[in-house]
Length: 518
Ligand code: PLP
Image (cartoon, rainbow, N blue to C red; front, side):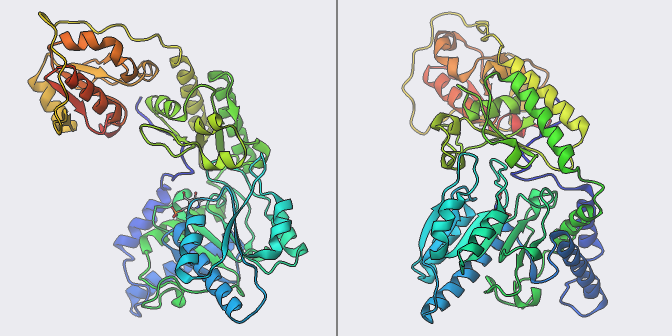
């Protein structure tokens, strides 16, 4: 498996080649400070102005503030600070103002966390409340109608990062209008850029944060748009850059790269249309249905971004599926917060009222609007192989070469962990121990998807989950053992077990196959 099929675009995307070139040019030729008045500074200023003008055209935001930020988290922070300072002032002046900070129940963590943080820090004393969503993940407009008169600040998202569910922003605006709400309104537009039409000037949205790295720009660059009459308080003060709205010397490489992405969006030739993307999504869905009978899609496609699929497979944890896809070189994300040991069910899916098991098993597959047919075809082929790999038989027993009495089980020695090898250490160890046994402790289905020969040697399959059955063999085996897995977690556990069983020459590959050069 030489190429990686990257299907985790909602987490972050690769960088557009034109964006890399633009960043490189900004670093090499156009490195001036846009605040300087000499020619080098003026060239940098022109680059900055050009990127901003493009952004205004792409976002349909001719009016209002449009500033570059470090990303959406900063934009959200700035919007929350601005809104809460205004609410505090209104309340201090005895003006009518709601008492609720209302946020969509499926918002990115950055929103409720920022609301709680600034509400406490500013002593605003408002009540945080989640606006529930329905089974399709869309905001409950009936609840909003009840809560809108009490709402001081409303935060919703344009599209959800886990499920791709697209919010009914027109419906929300209509409820705010109908109820005469004075609420300020932030819409997290991170997942909308390049995937949904935006015409910010024509909406009633007050704050719209964006992030570059979700659409082919690098990490560390974003934008915040603020409606002309919306209250504004800078988050960062200092040299007065960005017209005093956001101090700090501008990230010119990031801005140049984002400018190149905005240019591609404006010109329209590079990115696929909604219909093309929906057809690609349907092909992926068909191959998933064929590979995983019983699969359940967690969002109705008609209300979701065409670039996001969220699904669960009964009796297969999201973590196990992620491992399986990873073994096939397909990068996806478990739709829930995962640690190596346990997967927490996704809050977003729980908020939609899906059963606990389905929420814990969720997987997200997301691609960007640059995807082409060849990419989707290869992704479908690998999904099919993943389905076949699940039928792989359990591993045969490893050949024993040990002789004599089995080693006696040892009590674990506190603090004496089995030796971890990095890539260099692995080469050295295998060179020094031609008899060492390489053991792949991933599941049999992961092994079946193709296991690289490490330094010319084949590996045996002995999944961590089956290690107890093979304890007798492990006790007898006298050759050095080198365990490896995908990320280094399972192999570290296997090495510890082998050591506790009395094996004295145990190694494991730190960081796993993921860190070995492809
Ligand atoms: N909002 C949404 C919907 C996101 O998906 C993300 C990133 O995961 C963020 C906010 C935070 O963006 P950034 O990484 O630019 O701070």
